[in-house]
Length: 208
Image (cartoon, rainbow, N blue to C red; front, side):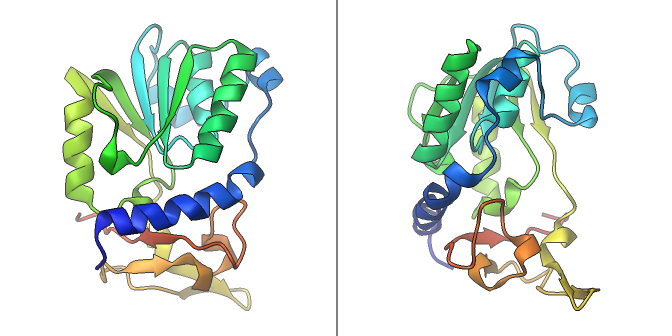
């Protein structure tokens, strides 16, 4: 397998190419108290008031700004400079306590600090080429007694597809091999992606 930086650098180009088409909510949505969070997330994080929160793989900031609406002091990190620019512009227009940084999760800027909550949500883990390094990085970002809020679908979702109206096995759940999303079903591609979008994801079984 290629090294981590080779995968993440290539994926940065892919995400930059589609970031503007991924459904960023306007500032007015958040000014009106809007939220893109699921109930399960809010039940798990019932008291965000004045808590420092780091959102990894924050994309265009929809969930980050929703967390800020609920009182968190949010720092969002995403590998796409385009997505981060969109997120910061929306935060500034909405007057929310949120800052956004463009960085590879595996190469975060020094001095980022420690946080009460590190948050990562639906469809994030499959973009991590190295889970052990990811976990060590998260542990180093948490204050003593801090919380990792990780929300994910079951990874079997990553290897199922639909062909002629039937659910089929379209990948190897136990293969630990990268997936080129240019050659997967449309349903497996992220919002905004086309058959020309060059992105590589990873299937990590629950056991990992």
